[in-house]
Length: 383
Image (tube, rainbow, N blue to C red; front, side, top):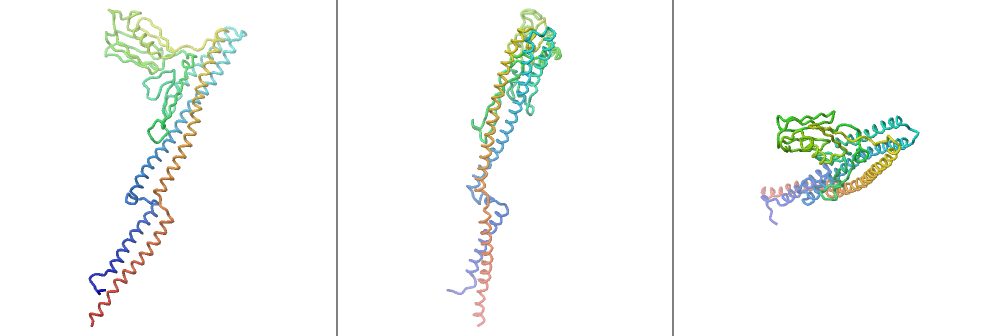
């Protein structure tokens, strides 16, 4: 083997080994510092993609858990209101049974009727006031609906999955539980809201307290709008000659026909020329023994409706318990899978670090030895 100075092969090999060992040691230190096996895409290109997808699914699943818990809170709020309405119906039935007894005279039944009216009004108030985070629950209107129905069901959709498939949605119908929906009418009062829109200069007045609409002078083809309990009714004025205040064909009659066609629950309209008076139906009649006996059957039917609604909501609430339990299990396993891909193995990394530190010391020593070995050339030059 030639004895040379220009190229120190041993030193180059030791230098390369030291560089490689230093890189491995830096990787081990980084993993031990962050606790992650994958700190950049270069560590594991496929692993980064898999971990990213798992992260999205984990976060979506965790949010779905919160969605399900919120849905359960909303449902339990509605069911709690149903429970109180059920209590009110029980008392109303008790009053009806009492009034059916002929030991009561007209004054007694009138006093009982006052309480019946008050209880019916409270049922309407609960139905209109029960809400969750500002969202009305028992008025029969689906979220973001343009109008309140006061009857039928409101459909709520709860997203309880991390994806966008049909299996990630639960649709729940919450029945309207006001007096009209339960078939027990409502308290005598004006509608919830009356608003008007008319062309500039047209006379169109609304009296909220009295529940009246007064139509003044309008022209043919004018468009009048009135909102009653959330339902907007539009009337395009159509005159037959000068029949402005005609009871049968005038503007008020046209509006009355359109409002009645809208089917607003529990609404009664009386007309006097250009004035419409709107009221919600009165309470159950118990003024006679026969009326009270009829009222018992009416209240029993209302109790069946409210009990069915409570059963439906209770079933969904129990279902959501299982939904949360399953989603929690899914989230835990997803996080475990992500951890196996992404997390650092501290036992392996500390072993690798110790090995790299020893090799670094060894390669440094060998580099020093390789550099020193060329000193032998000087003895030849000294002669």
